[in-house]
Length: 146
Image (cartoon, rainbow, N blue to C red):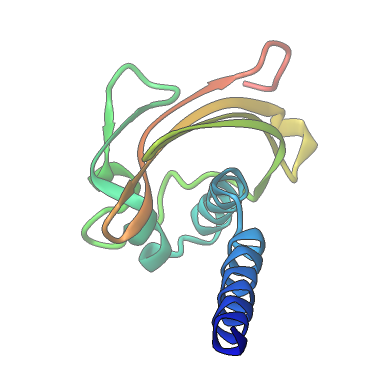
C-alpha cells in the first residue's frame, strides 16, 4: 500500500512538470508575430543570414511590381542591399494557425511616417529548420504615400 502511494505521488509530480512545461511554451501565434518582426528588422538592416533562415527556398511573393518574387529577390546571392524595406514595425496583426501552416495578416508602418503603411499577408510553414516564410503579399494601403 505504501509503495503504491509513493508511485502515485511520483506520477503526480512528473505530470505536473509536464503540464507546467507545456504552459510555458510560446504559442505558435506569438512565434509567428515575432518572426514577422524579425523579418522586418532583417530587411531594414540587410541582415542576410536572418533573411536566409526565414525565407523558404521555394518562397514566392508579390509586392509593388508586376512580377512574382522569389527567395533570390529577397536574399540576393551577391549580398546586394538594394531595394530593402525601410525600418518598419508591425502595428497590428491577426494570426491563424492551421497545423504546420500559419497565416499572418497585418498592418506595417515605416518609421518615416511620410512613407505610409502596408497591408501584408504572410504565410509561414513549419519545416525541419523551424517556421519559414513561404509566401507573402504586400500592398500599399489606401491613402498611403506612393
